[in-house]
Each structure stands twice: as structure tokens, then as C-alpha cells.
Length: 407
Image (cartoon, rainbow, N blue to C red; front, side, top):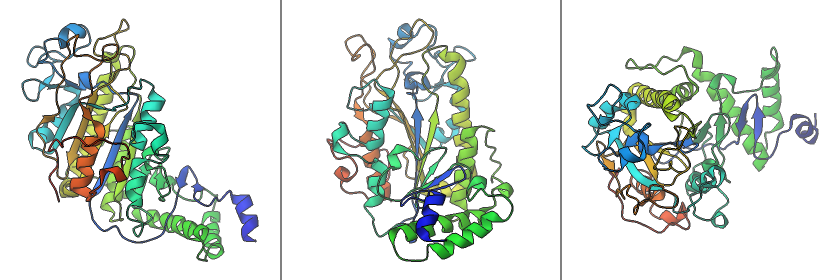
């Protein structure tokens, strides 16, 4: 079969192979210069930071949320969990309390975009790009980081876990997308998959960019076969929830412990847009989030010293509850970070207050910390990025919060 004809039949493009349910934007092969791992977790839909890390010490909080607000610690069975005398953690986040108390987990409050968008699509797009204005960068901020080291291009250096590669990883640097390890490959009946792999290996054996990408994809298939996901057993007594997020983090942990040269992983969790009946929906999602992250940290053990996880969400929720026992689109929100280098056991940020003269727009928490300030400190302290503009072109530097220790 001629190469040109094969391309027409197989749908192989210059930057992406579609194998089973997994998109592979493939790869060459070298090893990253450092062993730090970044996990970027995006809570898509605008998580309610005012109920996840509730400012119960603010005198206006209870009056703004009379039916859905988190009760003061110690006042009821569903009360918040005291963090510092002012902020209380949602009770469904209890599995993470021990990591906060041990100094491995920190929160940032009143963080967010400097852009005032209340559109999910626009705000997520801006945050994924790491910019304030759409004209400033077409690619994702994580892909710009990867492209800083053009000599480092290992097949597994950057991985998107899930149905689609997060937009923060979109760009010119090759990224691997994995939905499920055991589905990663050529989905052909019988022994046709093995035959096709052998054919592809012989077909793409030159030095062109297309050949290199195809070779990288085939190498990824071979490497992931060796991991044998069905035989993986979490360590240290870790038990991942039987949920989509639990499965994704279990597989991420398996990839990390397999010894592949991973540096960046992007994971998305959808479903945080709670306009109605928030107190019936949010606790289950938070239990899944907290239980999964607790299992991941437990499973990783000493490996957590080289893994730093950070969460973000496109914006927060309005300060006051609506008539449907939910919350509408807001502005300022929380971030969470855990693992290597985190100076935990604290809620960072400049609290703006919830008074009528302190809220912004139509009753939103102000964002006093640009979310990129947290990411800038993280990337500088743990990944040796000395020029924030290389990642965030229109970012105006703010004083760092002191969340991370340097390597």
C-alpha cells in the first residue's frame, strides 16, 4: 500500500492519530530535564467556592445564603469544618482535612479572572489560554510552557486524561490524549491490530515530521501495553471511588508510578453549574472530588513530593442564593493546591468582604487575586519558569502569596 493511499484510508493526519477512543497528538523521544509533575484540574461549570470554602466568619455570609449556606462549625451535623476561625470547609470535603492539617493542602480565596465575563464558554477559554483578551494568544498556557523546552519532547511529557485534551494543553507542542489505558490502541478485531501496527511501523520509517509523529504514536501504544491496567493495585490502602473522576485519577497514578517521563497532566471535571437545588447536588460531587484526591495522595505516597496539583474554575457563584435554592454566575472563586512544595494548612488571599459596598457586578465576590498569580508562583517555584509573560502574555504581575517553596 502506498503511503498516500494509506493516509486517505486511515484518516491519519500530520498532528493527530485517532486510535479507538483516544486522540494521539504524538511525539518524539527525549527525557524531561526535571522530575516534577504538574496536575492541572479544571472544575468546569463554575464551582461554588463560597460553599466549598465558606467564609462563615463574614457577618454577611449567612444573610446572603439563608437556606443553602454552610452552618457555623459545631452547630449541626452538616456544619462546616473549621479551617482557621474564619473559613470553614464544606463537610463533604472531610477526606481532605488531614492533608490540610499536615500542611500538604492549601486554598486560595477570592481568586479569578481579571476579565469580567460571566459566560462559561468565554471564561473557560480565557483561563485555558491564560489571557485577559482573546487576541493575545491562540494556544493554551500549558502548551506554551511545554514549548519553552523545544529539545524536550517525550511522547508522554504532556497527557490529557479524559474524553478530550484540555484546551490549556492545545497548541504546537505534541500532547498525548488518553481516555482509558486499556482502550488505547488500534481497535481492530482478532490479530488485525498487531498486523496493522507492524504495517504502520514499516510504512512510517522516515524522518519527516509525519513519520516522527506516527512513530511516537506507535511507541505510545507499545509502552501502554506494558502497563497492564487490569493488574494495577493502589498502594498504602488507597481506595479510589467508583466514579469517572476516580477512574481517571487512578489511571493517572498508574501512569506516574509506571516510570514514564510525564511532566504535565490535564484533567477536567464537568457539572459544577448549580443554578438549582445546590444542596442536593454539590455534596455528592464534593465527596467524589475529596475522596478521589485523598486516594490519589495516599496511593502516591512519597511520590507526592514531586507532584503538585492545582485546581481552577472559570468563575465563582453569586454571593446571594437565588429563588431556586441555587446560585447564579459570579466572579471571584477559590483555588486548591496540594502536594510537592505546597505550604499548606492555610487559606491564602486578600478577602474583600461580602458587604453590599464590597460586592461587584450584580452581587459577586470580588477577585482580589488574579488566578495567574498562583500559577506564576507555582511555575516559577517548581518548574523554573523565570518569565511569567512567556506563559501569560498580558499578565500584570502581582505580589506572590508565598504558597510554594522552591525546589
